[in-house]
Amino acid sequence: MFEWSETDLMIRDAVRTFIDKEVRPHLDALDSGEMLPYPILRKLFSQFGIDTMAEDMVTKMLAKEESGEGGGSKRGPFGDQQSMMAVLISELSGVCMGLVSALGVSIGLGATTIMSRGTLAQKQRWLADIVTLRKVASWAITEPDSGSDAFGGMKTRVERDGEDYILNGQKTFITNGPCADVIIVYAKLDEGDGADKRDRKVLTFVLDKGMEGLTQGKPFKKMGLHSSPTGELFFDNIRLGKDRLLGETEDHRSGDGRESARASFTAERIGVGFMALGVIEECHRLCVDYARNRTLWGQEIGRFQLIQLKLAKMEVARINVRNMVFNVLERSKAGKPPSLAEASAMKLYCSEAATEVAMEAVQLFGGNGYMSEYRVEQLARDAKSLMIYAGSNEIQVTHIAKGLLAR
Image (tube, rainbow, N blue to C red; front, side, top):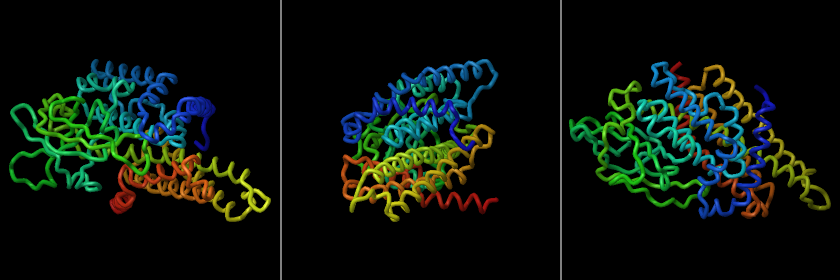
């Protein structure tokens, strides 16, 4: 694959029309937090029939699983529609990345984790509502004192109490956390045997909004991604039945929650590449237009070599990131998705490229680029999050090197 198909381009044009009508007029309200992202996302899903398509796929998959034919999906709730979702993600990211963050965590992490690790009953209980956006999901692993050491430093814990579990702890920087209806939580199993806390088994539970002992904090004030609510979660002696333990057994086929989380890390890091492409293409478009129309000393600034150098570097970044996206799509079609190390490499390069392009866009616009009315200011704030989002870039280096040395 070296370019978008005709179908992809039709979808892209339709998405751009939707964005012009439903997103751009509300950018200030989204960026201030006055407007939440979910109503716009639900309208998008409804207008393009994505909700119906996703629910139909889930219904068919669960029917096959119930009849004993299998049907568990490794590709997520949108089956073979990765190309369509790549177009959707990149186009939205170039205008309002927070919408993509809210959507990606709810479905790409929340629904996919339940789909890949849950029992049939658990999938029937939660999946349809999440993939249609009737309910919003969050995915809670990060803690105040763990950060990149997600598993070793994890303090959130569950203890057995008869057939139930008691959950205590805290999570932070949780996308959709303040508003989530469904919450996937990773916690260490405390068996009271004095075992090293770093090595304890990690279990994965599904919580619902309003449960006794669950507190969802207010949205944080952030540098960027203002349209994506991010906050803390607090767990105070929450009683959980085994029906909320993904797989309903501690001896799940994945061993424990670590493997579940690693699979999600791969998908999340690939998603960063799609988001980076949107940021780069939008900055590229805005800068080319500005270079053609802005004049200094009686000529368009696009005639100056230093401006041309900036535009040329943006074009190189755009080509490289787009090629990475196309490579992932082709590999997914062939049933050979990237490894965690390869996804980390993609995330590292694409996030750095997007941040550099966005900052250079601000510089190209000069004083105007520092003003919020010129969109490159917001793009620069949002792009920086990609170097931290889905694991800091420093951690990506470690994962890439481990993958190379393990060969």
